[in-house]
Image: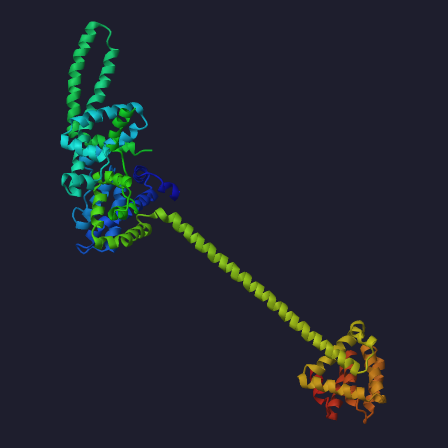
Length: 250
Length: 282
């Protein structure tokens, strides 16, 4: 059983820990990230009089409790939040909430993974992404092109542009975030419009009806457009969590 | 086809890459990675603040020294924490079961060894007893010819009258048991003297009496023993007294046996002590 659990991906282990209260799964997940947990905790152990014997058991207990109660879209961000709060001894009782920036990327990662097994979805996603990629600022586009398509390393890009490695990383991250936001906005816009078109063809019986429906369609399309834009801008987080909950199921 | 592949490449921007594992993290910091692997990990670093923090921290030598030890320490905390890792209950149970099994194996192994040692010890004891018996029987074989018995008479120990056998056994015990080695040597010495004097008529009478005694013919033996006891000069007088007392004893005439033994005690000879003992036992 332990061997089987050790081979499961993070999503499934988290789903097991939360839904089935599977302590084995939680333990395996924490052990999988124990080296990162230890490394990131090292500076905290030298401040505020934290000792490993006091620091780690409490931290692990908090992580374990959080695993059982929360939906975690990004494990790195989640773990870092708890390490920082435990290390600085502030906000110990606050819960972790995923940031909308990270959830945009996580959501697209999930869509890209899902699209690999659905050719039509893949085609749609690729065409949208290419279209949005062309709309990006030149600097962002070039940076993403160099890093992802030309496969240059941080060091190479930093040397070319005169940045530090950390600056390069942050710039790529921002560009990627920008791209993700635009892609999601476009995807949210196109999907309901296409559904409305399908409905429209079914009702095209007479010219009057067609005219009337077309009028209705244009108004409803406008409304949908507004709603989707609004959703894309402000209401993404709830949808993200919903998607992730569905995605984290088996 | 080429354009399609190029178009699909854009999906790579949002392909998911896992966090650094225990091995990759120090290798990335030390620059011991292939270009492909390094680029893949950097794709992950773009998004993951935890891993990029870890890389940044490990670039400082004082933290790098603690990486291995602290990692294993955290693992230890996870495994031993009762809150977090009932996870490893199964593993702990297996370990306990293994320890129990090995303990049982050692236990039964020790028991088996003890049994084997005990078995060999018992065998050795038995062998020792047999040796003692053999030496005893050898001594008997020496004394019996010394007392003048024929080979066919030797077998009468097993085939004769049960009373006579027990009587002979008791007599032998009386000769050997009470006085130990010293008396045994005396008993062995006396018959040697008897053997030397082949022409002595008392000796032949005593031999004949013992012969009858061993065959179970107590009456005939008693007649000869009485004759020998009457002879005050005879060297076999004391022995004859003793054997006569034994004959009375086995004929359940204890008063007479006691009387004869008292006479033997009064003679105050070499057989006095044995006579006294036999008297006490009656």
